[in-house]
Length: 229
Length: 330
Image (cartoon, rainbow over the protein chains, first blue to last red):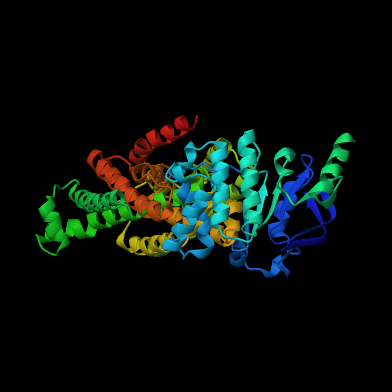
């Protein structure tokens, strides 16, 4: 579904990843782990900007921005708290690739937005102002926005950061449901192994400028080895 | 559209019409509302008709256009910079336009260039566009490195001060006549715009407004930031170019013809957000337009009544809003 082969990535003049390769299948849930500054966010960014990345077999450079918006949704670490912007309005932004030039929502769009809000457990918060939400509620609203975008691929940058332990598990469970029941390909960066290990199919580990993709059972041993070192 | 929103739009539209008539009625010669309406419909005495149609109508239309242009450019800048304190006056765009006009009005006579009135109008507008565009591009470049709202604000003040210093140097070397025309321009006036200048101002404001309308959807997406907007299919560079061009046309042209009018661009979009309780630009664009018209017409009525420059009135109206925004964020 999404693939990169032998790509090197830099941040400014510093090379962060050398000959990085990653291959994610349809319906695969993969956690991207590594130390702070290892290049997790850079890699996630590259997956939507680097022309050599292959999405559904096509190079990213050959996909129009409009088509890409219908293929890949992102959730960044940024918290979008805007006064007078309701949760349902924020989630409805995800419908942008499908609406007309002024962003007019059709009945089907409203239905999809409602379902996405329900899926993340924010049905009672739909009319709440985003500036009044907690970090956990806002993170779920951002994931609902990505769900409403109806893309086969979702990339998330530290979706469990700053959340309490139950909410972290809840977010990971939601990602697993999206991948395993709805067939979405999901890659998310995290430091939270306790929440990620039980649900992920594979791990992409960045260590010393190298990216290695391993199935979860092998990844667990590898991560323990890195910790012991 | 919600019932409350529809009612608010209707009330604002009625208020705009009423204020427009009041603005025409107020002046050194007292004219009643019925006489204004009669003159606008082609009736009444020749003297009253002449005052209304040849002088006051032009001024009121300029107030309407200036209100639209300044408030919409403020809204666009607040979205583009994701900065609630952004506005053409605060970020130095009006100062850039002032520099352009100063270079033209004070610099051209120094070089021995004498232009016809029409060419002078076009030259003033062109100089203001170039000046505001240069400052806008500088602000965009700085805002890419600096995300702090207060630092951007201070940089805007520094830019304005720097521009002010350059203008003072120009003033020092300029002749008495060109100095006078520049000083009069800086006071800001809606009454000095002639009907031929209005014929240039109106289409430019309409073009700028049309560009703003074309960016309604991208502006909604930009609320979440450029990265999210791009991930939802927004062509960021095209949107940025459209918004910057529109802002330059709107703020630059009005500054060129009416002088620097402050605090409309920064205050009106916030009033619209508060009154309409919305962050949706499909609501904010028309509401900011109407509220901008209201603010400038009220400002012009007060300015005419007390014989004061328009920018002093808009400052007094806008500053409390800015103080409210700053103190609320702390």
